[in-house]
Amino acid sequence: MEGLAYSQSRHEPLGPENELVVRARAGDTDAFAEIVRSYQTRVYAVAMRMTRRHDVADDIAQDTFVRAYRHLGRFELGRPLGPWLTKIAVNLSINYLNASARREETCDAEAFPDGPFEPEPREPDAFEQLRSLEFAEALERAVASLPVEQQCIFRLKVVEGMRYEEIATILNLSAGTVMSRLSRARAKLKVLLKEHL
Image 1 (cartoon, helix red, strand yellow):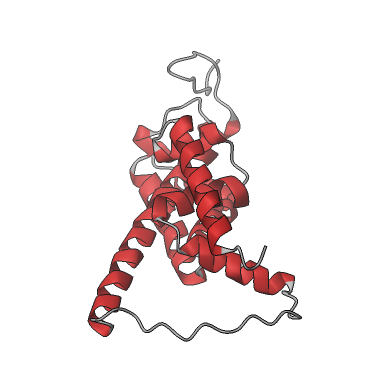
Image 2: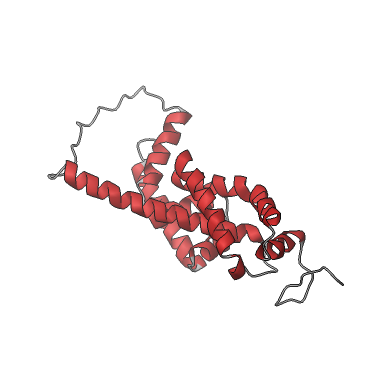
């Protein structure tokens, strides 16, 4: 049939989403704009959950689509586009988190050459009831303190609800490694949040 694009590996007609990729590769900017409209909310949401900063998530979402456009030739036709875009967004988020962690270490070393100031521990109030908002804030601080690779896996699994296999594909890890890192992350969170649990 004329006008139909086919998967290189399966020799089957491509779905509408991959048809947009084929058109965008040929220089059709309207086709790529349609891809952006379809996925911009999802890509932004992933970046926001990973970085917890609107301005950073917005930049990462834009950069995701810029990189996707530049590398459309690498996208394997016949596969869903969403996971590919998500992988780009997650990798950019990891780069940001790693760079941010390095900046914080440098700032801490300069500001506190003898180590950061530790406030006096506050006596726990036996009658104090933690509200759900306070717990959510404590959880976010605890998650943000995890090593970047554990933090990312925790957010992708618990917040995004991704399957182990999806996370493994995005991060180029085995499913077993994903499971073990998630297990370590949960163990650390239990320790960090023990006073709230």
